[in-house]
Length: 291
View 1 (tube, rainbow, N blue to C red):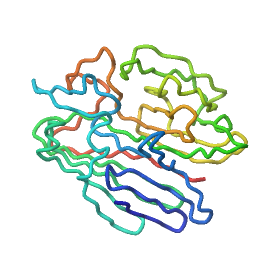
View 2 (cartoon, helix red, strand yellow; view 1 turned 45 degrees about the vertical axis):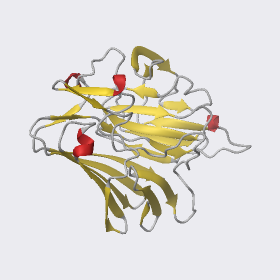
View 3 (tube, rainbow, N blue to C red; view 1 turned 90 degrees about the vertical axis):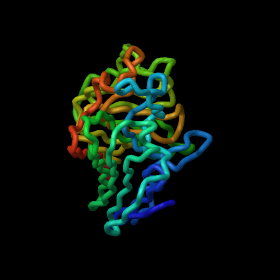
View 4 (cartoon, rainbow, N blue to C red; view 1 turned 90 degrees about the horizontal axis):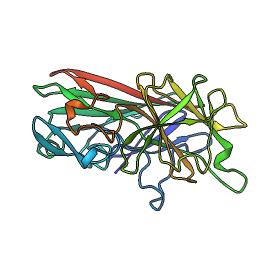
């Protein structure tokens, strides 16, 4: 089911199944900033990643001697059990409470809420996580929003770029044939923090920049100064991804990383994961600004 929030400047539509952003438009121009799903290309637009990111080694996490089947990107994506709450015309949230079903995939008692708020020309997406378990909780979380890069006879993907908040040397972790992170890194050419997009940039899958010193990126056309800014001040990792030659770019701030090819399936051994003590709470947010 689709739900809508709006303010004077923006209108945003979110699908209750998985709490995925389906649309973000400028009300004055009707310009769409979220990629519109084409199932033959990719069947999502903005998956919510929790409590895992990317492919899970052997599709299993092990905790205290028990194995739990964990799907790629975790248990929120494609989940139709989230409860919906519309607080105001410009704010809504989707919540998943642990249950017998979630315990088959993830061993903790928890509350996970993703809250969407429009403020002027910005969309804030905040994750609120509570550990209701008696034990310390281990998790990763992140965003995976596909921003539209409209293409036509006169516009190609190479007309777009990603501008980083500061000039930086870009070294990307690479995914192996297994879909897991490998130990191989590759240099990604850029000019003073400007990464040119192309039809071939993602031929080797996502670009994963772990522990990157970057607080925001801007997706824009090369001949324009403004575009879409994605801010993620508390996320240590960033991934960029698209299907080759597709007309979108996923900008993915990550707290935690996909499993490494050489990593244990033990949950406690996942060094990039965050922890919350019993009874603790944690909040982290991603902001999209339409310039």
